[in-house]
Length: 253
Length: 202
Image 1 (cartoon, rainbow over the protein chains, first blue to last red):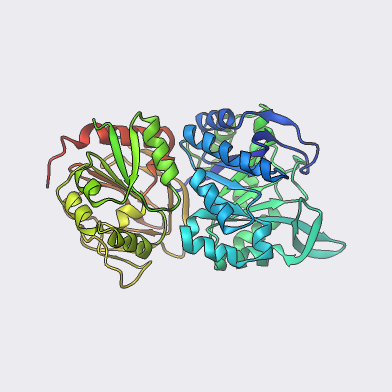
Image 2 (cartoon, rainbow over the protein chains, first blue to last red; image 1 turned 135 degrees about the horizontal axis):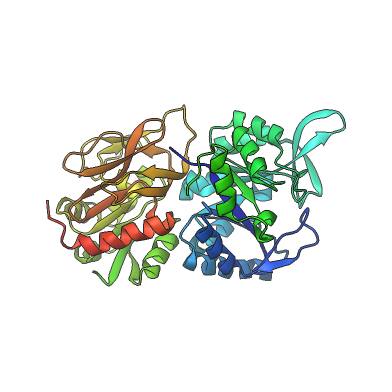
């Protein structure tokens, strides 16, 4: 039986690990290859690296960081952030990524998902969807881009579904409302997206405990992503998995 | 144990991960599309990410169909990963009309609608063809559900049983990715390298 995945996420900028609340106020949290290796040893099922560099130099540094991580890492590596073109994606795969996350580039030009899937197979293509509640009495969620500063007139659930038809093999679903708040995943959003697609959905944004992760799995997520709760050392992947197993969740141990 | 391993260069995706695994095991890893290499290499890896049709197209383009077919038929040390396993069969629902290597009879079919596809993640592989068994990382939409004749098979479950790994002589074929299966994958490949040479030819 397929187990539920726990995925630590490293945000890197200029080749170093950072994690900020709502993508602002970044603080340095350590060496990427070192952290990657320790997460594998703790039992991480996969690793996601998001490049939040703002400059071309920063993104070039990220490629070297991916190479460094690949050398030591024996579990799957998804890299996202900064993927603008097909060539960006192929460069990340060549550097050692197993999957590439595409976000804004896909919103702007959805066919990039198809081109990438045709070239490397859909199992390498992850559609990153950043979603925020419509609010103001409107139900549903819209897609947000540019670190949350732009709200699009695009329904997040519909977009995930389109992404699947276009070639995405997995959805990385981040709740902009919950990211960095440690108040739990947006399970209503998760439930809607999981009901609409048959590819795996990775829940992201808001995790602070094994209980939050359990809720995400119950909402239909195949995997959960978390950053700060692991970086801070309050929990290890192993301790989270032990708790989840105690709650009857199938995890790899 | 061989000191060098030749990896068929599929020009896509998981080459870097496969290569990194062998380097961590202390071997030289070389990417190649050369026919001589495919015939002569002490240990050969047929990786595979991507579509069945594209994978077979690449082997044909490089003239590798017959050399690999023969090598596998003889049970010489060969590791086939994911699509590499599927290409050993006659055909696949993924690419109708494309002829596989046909070392094994039968075809490759899609997972049923009732389960999440692709199968992404860690699934339990029982002891058998894949040594002691353990959790391995899968990333596939298609799979084999019939036991190929003459091979030792380890079965996993995802919407019914499917071939997780199969072994005959020096050939180990894995539907999962040993290069992404952490300590379990590394141990499996290390043990394949150690025993492949003494595998009985078929």
